[in-house]
Length: 286
Ligand SMILES: [Fe+2]
Ligand SMILES: [Fe+2]
Image (tube, rainbow, N blue to C red; front, side):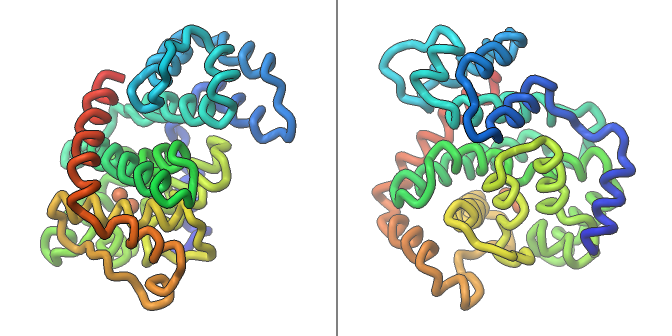
């Protein structure tokens, strides 16, 4: 499907999920070159339920802080803008994607489990290789497939056909989308990410996280999420995934660095499994 048609289709949906105004404002504010702390704190404090969730997240084991963060101001000064923005985006999007009209054939619990697994895997690779910030990789992993939720709510006939094609042809989701020429979830997700003013690297990662996607660029974050996604699918036993990539990408330095850091399976697999379980348990309660 061509991009113009997709955009036209997306624009015709008038009840697409929205981010709370505050989360949008935070994104807008952090796009400015110098965003003042006071302004950010004042903005966040307007939404106390968001504050509670952000503090819960930054005080969780993910952030490994020694002392407890009790206020948004403390969080911003201690953790910085990027961390707070990642926390805001995470909690706001989990809420925004809790749609009521999701196709029952689409297993939303498995969807989030996969997203959390990719987030944990991505963060591990990012920290180990230092190719990207671990936190950015976590957020990108969590949101990489968010377009699928939009398909499950607003493109249900397409999704039914995708699921059927996956089953009958034993191919993966992305290949099935391509085969039936439906709206690809990576483009649907990046459309929404753009609308929500998410940071550019996140929009690009959502857009290009499949090796076979029409990539106009390859960044380190994209390489990390692409490989994490394939690894997690393989760990889950899903069909149609392998670590083999097309020739040009196999030779790219970032992918090589990533594959090297993953070569000692016995070193990282138990750690990752534990972290994945902890993360799933945490987000289940968010
Ligand atoms: Fe995907
Ligand atoms: Fe995925």
